[in-house]
Image (cartoon, rainbow, N blue to C red; front, side):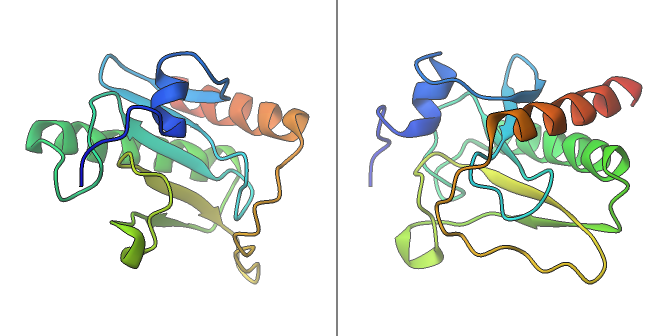
Length: 141
């Protein structure tokens, strides 16, 4: 399979679609998931074109892993979470929906289950508030 330049994350990277940024480097972008499975759900993506784990360049994957750790620590601290769930899916059979490699970083709280992936959009003001908290925690690290 080939990379699709019109996937939603490619459009976000080109500035064609908005996002609530929480972390950015010259190689990585992390932003709030608009259909979160939990409070503080962040997506971390490389700026390089890669469909998934099966075709991403090793150096891009290394930068992505570093960013997942930075975002995970910040999200956990910012929201006083008890733990984290980190997910990454590959190809349709593996659960991948957007075909640009990405990691889900989801703060977790004791006794609170993940919400189902229903496609329900979160209110923009809620995403803005979460993003501000996580950005502030990134700045402290």
